[in-house]
Picture 1 (tube, rainbow, N blue to C red):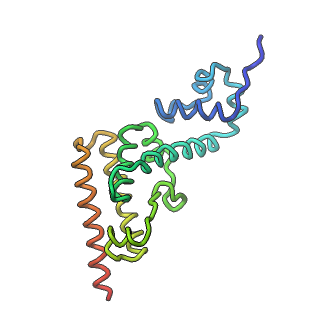
Picture 2: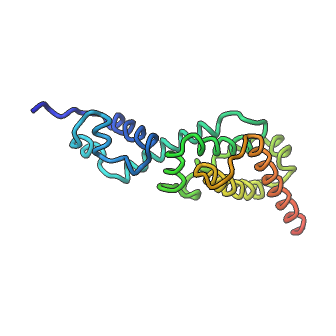
Picture 3: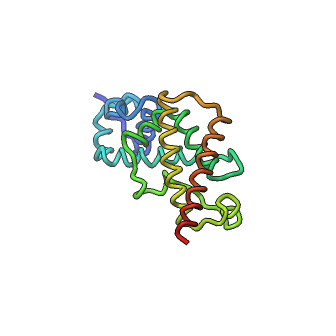
Length: 191
């Protein structure tokens, strides 16, 4: 019998991520990874150590893909642009989106990656938020994340009407403006 093929942990992780991306986490098994690599399952079990480690690594790789979508320049407004990137990720990478949004989510409190808003300089913040303080902006960002998350879920899994990009931008812009207006009113009431 020929010796077992040996693979690096990185090769095994790449094969696992490829399977996740194509067909979902339910198909990421030692057997499917072995088939992807043309190997027996023995080296897979040896290299993986635990499913928790594998899930953690797959989360990191999925978030890296999400961040790629969110960092693409879509619009002048960086907040709206990142929201559109999140929805584009959900549309294009359904298996990865299902994994990170439903099957193995990372709590917002534990990771800034899912709420990866790159706050611009003070002039741009003033332009988009009209002088609101950082606490109000973070509140708006969190509310916006939950809205975009729900919208992405409904679009990715077909429970929502298909929106054109222009319709999505308008919906997101209107919702963001409503959140901003609410924070301004709230701020005025506390004065």
